[in-house]
Image 1: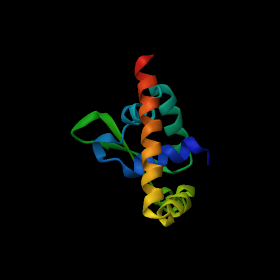
Image 2: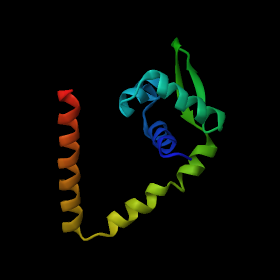
Image 3: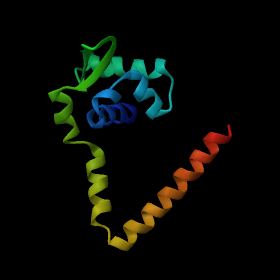
Image 4: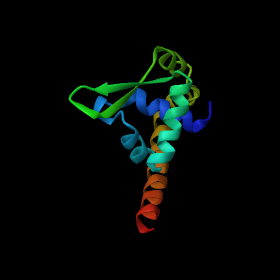
Amino acid sequence: MKPSQWTALRYFAGANNSQRTVSAFADFHATTRGAASQMVEVLVGKELLVRVPVPEDRRVTQLHPTPKALELLRHDPLNDFAGVIAALPGEEQYKLAETLTSLLRGLLEKRQSV
């Protein structure tokens, strides 16, 4: 799978029900609704996501990971990455967190100034 597909799959597996929509994913992924919709179509086609209509509001369709997707996520490549970070000494984990926080703040500032 492509990295963007992994990102989408992780998002829908971890999101609460009200956030399991194309619009919410687009906002999270900082992309257009159209691009998010195309990503969802690919994952539905691969039988990794399933559409579930919301009975209270027929205009809303939630996207839920299938058992196939959940099994795939058990072998998520980021699991190894997270394991290596978890094995670092506490001080190195803290420094890494500080560095990543600085990077993310800088990116956010850059995005907001555009």
